[in-house]
Image (cartoon, rainbow, N blue to C red; front, side, top):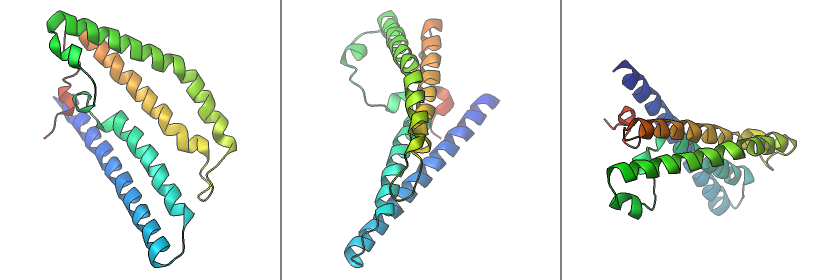
Length: 167
């Protein structure tokens, strides 16, 4: 029970960070519009900040806020089968995703660390810092699918994770 409470606490903090990123993105977008159309003074930093927040918002949200049952997927075949077949499909899918993410991780890390040589045009954010969210996302996906795989192998439904239930 205590573990569920801790998980809910961290999930709410991840939602808070996501909401903060959305607010920053919205304010930068409004600033960009106001400066361009009201003051006739385009500002590049606002556009750049909007794009940076969008990138981080999407990957942060997918890594830490979005639940498995909230993801968009084409599951016509999966929904039409029951029990053992569904479990086998979950195991195969989890193994495939784990293999893809684990195989791509060294190349993704190399790319992110290589990008330290460049920075954004206006805010001078190094690209390795900017793209580091992808590595966080990839590690979170690997952990999530390890959990789903273990749950499926053990006979539990890994997609119904009750530690992240809405209150």
